[in-house]
Length: 91
Image 1 (tube, rainbow, N blue to C red):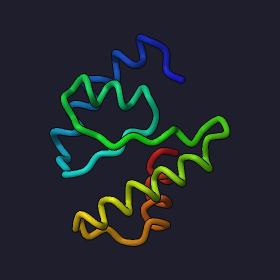
Image 2: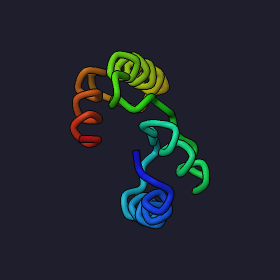
Image 3: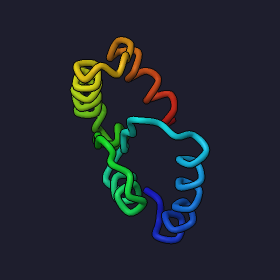
């Protein structure tokens, strides 16, 4: 888990990243990410971070988010592909 100074240092980087790569949907992995996104005014879906034994709950939450987005017409692929991409990107 990042300490307070690491979280503070990461906030401008997150803001710059979101400005460089705008997207319609954002998923926060964990409470720290959710708090940072909220601070930046980003409306994000939230899933438990898969570390520390939370992988099963993470997969269920990501599956639910993907299904909701699919129903809304966002054109996502399969939920398993989305979980694989998300896990790979968070590693």
